[in-house]
Length: 159
Image 1 (cartoon, rainbow, N blue to C red):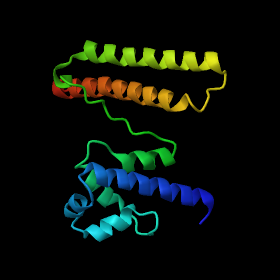
Image 2: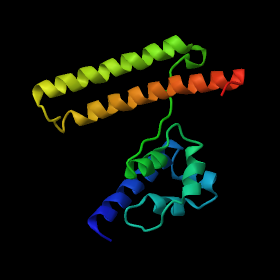
Image 3: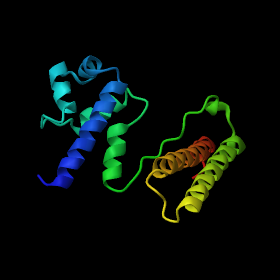
Image 4: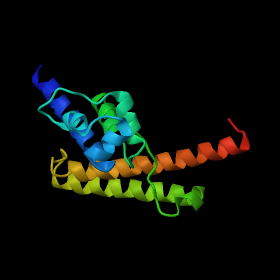
């Protein structure tokens, strides 16, 4: 196994560990999967080669608010998982509220990038987590607008 493969395995184990924590810990994850707690513990341990299968990850992610394993797999392939942000009152928000939220988020990312570029034309590593967080928020807000439009089209029978 080369260094890149080791790094990838470590990232996947970290994502599985996060997922197990989100569903309530090793015992709860074991119940959801029909596995022993020791088996689930091996899935999360960087010292064991046991891997959580895709079907098992999906089963756990159904009990989680986030999708850390799915997101990690998408990231490893240069992709991203789009999921609308869960806002209070979101179900009653109309198109314009959602659209405005997406624009507000886009403005925040533009401000962050502008401030970062003023300090350093090449975005500094210290700025990357904040910019990344704002980009993810903006993408999620746009996904929320898109999901709203798709739902509206489905109700009206539009294609």
